[in-house]
Length: 298
Image 1 (cartoon, rainbow, N blue to C red):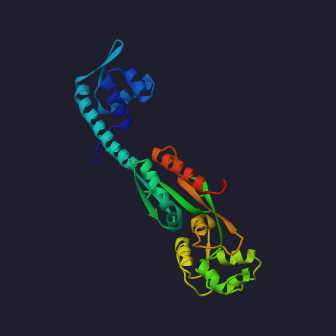
Image 2 (image 1 turned 180 degrees about the horizontal axis):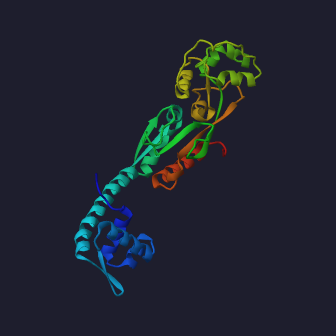
Image 3 (image 1 turned 90 degrees about the vertical axis):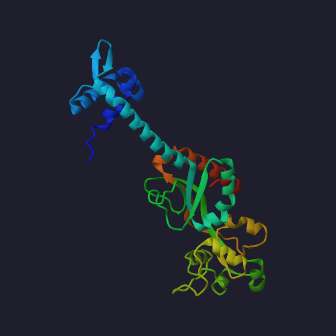
């Protein structure tokens, strides 16, 4: 077990020893001269030996102080180097967590432009529909789907999540045209999705009680959209994520009605890290990219 004196006092001694001046040490450390004198006295009492000789208008290191000072300075230099390496590693890698849907339908298509603008920084993208833990998962910033209100995090609204049925043009040609009640009989992709009964009820359709219909169940909207493009059925999708596929004719929207349950995508990071440069740069880039794609401010 180490028998170290108070590190705050050691830090003050190291600065005072380098300057051989309590006032200069106080200026470096952002303390008063009286506080420096007190910390040095505390250390001397702990060690049982004087470290400075007080002379008129100045202090001079004693033999004990002169012997200890270089070793302590080297120790502080070693600690500074160790923490500096951690800071450099932290600044060099940005870890972003988001859902499979947001990554596959939007973020992964654009992340390269952030990397090109910041070539000194490596970007690591973690995709999971589980909420990342900012401590155990070593995540810098997250784009989360939900209602917001996560404790200890700074949150910014990015994209509101709404939804409407979509399918391929070929599927519409084979099975359509559709009325809302037809959604109960045609093949649904992920019929267990609670968005289906919500949208249908808002469309005025009476949804029968009982378990969801049998059908293909996929684990993310990204997969559901591609299954819909392949003609596998009707999927409940968010228009924002599929606007290019709609514009280029790979998907069609049979209905004007768009529903929402109040969910959105949020940019999240710990409150204590709001000033970290790499987080600030990613935030600025992300908001600028989204502003180009969103039809109007959220």
